Each structure stands twice: as structure tokens, then as C-alpha cells.
Length: 392
Ligand code: NZQ
Ligand code: ZN
Image (cartoon, rainbow, N blue to C red; front, top):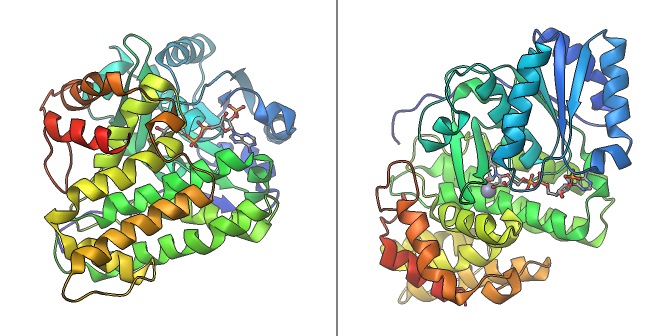
């Protein structure tokens, strides 16, 4: 196991009706004037926004609001939010919604205290200072409620990039599984897929003897394997939603990723798809993961065989472990299709003629332009192109 630091100081308030605590929590973490940031309207329709305002009123916290965050959140609204916060002397950003709203809130929080262009952070500059952020989560998926990360799409070129820094880790996150019960089946499945992807990205490691984190990851994927179908069958299954919601947080606050190298190839390759075609991140991952894993399998057959046996219930073929490894990848693919995820480029709305461009942007479109992708296997543009072709 490698040396590591793990410091994850987010206060989690989990369970029914916990959104009514948000006024107290904002106060506890030093806020006196809040920007309430939200998405395309689901929180208005569900009445959540009104309940949030009532809680802030009760705690005598002033607020301004900015809605309109789109899935795959855009830079334009971030600039608007930064301007609004400066004009209104906002000292706390409260995200009410999903990963997109949380990420947009984090970008605004960092941008308000930065003299330059907030996009610098999405070109590799570490975020060391930001307004405090709190979240009220409405979809179990991205894990942004417990992560130090934010992903934004720059409308200038539709480039989707991530930024990081402990300063944008939420001060508190309210997780009420009931709030996720209004999610349509497709979005629910996208969330389940994203959570599984966060676990695989950490499972695919070159660090040896990391049994504790291997076992934690396997346990979480097994949980998604049992709870996922339950919630797809009954979208109002509170207990299944509760298990998935907490799994989503644990999968991505990095407690299961410490002390080991990580991969993130599937995310890098997927981000090009959701940037160009505006598909849901989870749907893009459902198509991307099996292709990446098939391409990379020979790098460490036993790692893929291990997860095939321990999670997907495959029998170990001692003579041909590559067959076991492949069965595990196929089992993952079948599971994702069974919950309603797309299986190829066409179902995602992606186009074969864009492959060269997608691979180029993936490898060279980043701030550092390193030309390489992946922590598990170092991939070049030609490899990334081959992976996109496996998705056809
Ligand atoms: O905008 P509204 O009207 O709220 O509708 C949203 C949106 O259309 C809807 N929704 C959310 N909660 C709902 C609901 N509809 C009904 N009832 C509810 N309770 O769901 C749609 C998707 O929302 P979004 O916030 O985009 O989903 P998600 O949480 O999956 O976030 C995806 C974004 O997170 C990024 C992705 O790249 C993508 O941009 N990621 C962020 C990460 C991070 N910050 O750590 C890591 C992830 O790997 C990921 O890359
Ligand atoms: Zn993700």
C-alpha cells in the first residue's frame, strides 16, 4: 500500500426530512448570505426549493437564487453566478440538486475569490480558496457531495474538464433518499452506472496487496448489483434508494481509493462523449467501460478475473483466466443493459466519423496536452481511437 493522506471534513446529514436542517447548517458553517443554486426546475416542481427557503428564513439567513444549471454544466452560468455573488456580497453557496448543480456551485465558489478567469482551475490550477459550499443532493450518482472535484463544460469549444482542491469539498451535504424518489428510471440507472464506474476506476490499480480497499470496492459494487434492480423495479423503494445514496458518496469521497494508484480512463474517454453529444455522463460510461476494460484486460488479467469471481459470480478458469476476466466484463455489460443503459455508439447518439476528433481532444485537449490518458495503462491517441471503435 502506498503512503496517503485522507482528510474528508464534510458533515453529512442523512435521512428523511433532513433538508429542514439546512438553515442551521449554513449558520453553523459561517454563512450569512447564501446563493441558492439549482438546475432546470425539478427542485421547484417537487417543492424542495420552497422548503429550503423556509429553513433559511427560519434561521434568518438572507439569500439570492440562481437556477438553470444544465446537465453537463456550462461555463456561462458559472460566470453569471460569480458576478451575482460579488454584487450581492454572498458568503456561502448552497447547491440544491444533482452533480451538475453541485459542480457549478463549486466553480462559482472558487471563482468569487479568484482574480483571474475561473477556467484556469479547469486547466490544472489547484483550488486553494473558495467560498464555503453546502449541498442538498437530489440524485445518487456523481459523488460530488463528498468530493473535492468539479466538472464544467466550457461553451467555447464545448470542452469538458475537471478541477480539484480541498477548498471546494462541501462543508455539509444533506442526503435525504426520499428526494431521489422523483427521479425517472433512466436518470436513476445513469446514477447507478456512474457509481459503479467510480468504483472500477479505483479497482483498476497497479498497486499490489491492497486487500482492504479491494474488498470495500467489491462490497460496494455487490451492493449496487442487488439494490440497483430493486430500485429499477420500484422507484419509490426508500431502503434501496438509501443504500444507493450512501454507496454513491462512499464510492467517490476516496475512502476506497487511498493508498493505491487509480485509473480514470473510462471517465476521460466518456467526458468527450458527454461534451460533444450532451448525453448523460452515466449513459456514456455504460458504453465506455466495457470497451476500455476489454482493451486493457491483457495488462492484468488476474485483476479482471478477481472481480469477475468475487463480484460477478464467475467461476475461475485456472488454465485460462482470461476467459474468466472476459466473462466478468460481459456480466457488467449485461447488468448495465438490464437496467436500461445504452450499449453502443448509436444508442448514445455518437458518430463514427467523430472518432478521430474525440480521441485527439481526449489526449491533447487538456491544459497540459500530455497526449496520454489512463492510470492503469498509459494510452496514446491511437489506443483511444481503438477503444472508441470497440463501442460501435
Ligand atoms: O436540472 P434538474 O431539473 O434538477 O433535473 C436534473 C437533470 O435533468 C434531474 N434530476 C436531478 N435530481 C432529480 C432530477 N429529476 C427529478 N427528480 C430529482 N430528484 O436529473 C438530471 C441530471 O442531473 P445531473 O445533476 O446532471 O446528474 P448527475 O448527478 O449525474 O451529475 C452529472 C455531472 O457530474 C459530473 C458529470 O461529468 C456530469 O457533468 N461528475 C462530477 C464528479 C465530481 N464532481 O466529483 C465526478 C463524476 O465522475 C462526474 O464526472
Ligand atoms: Zn463519474
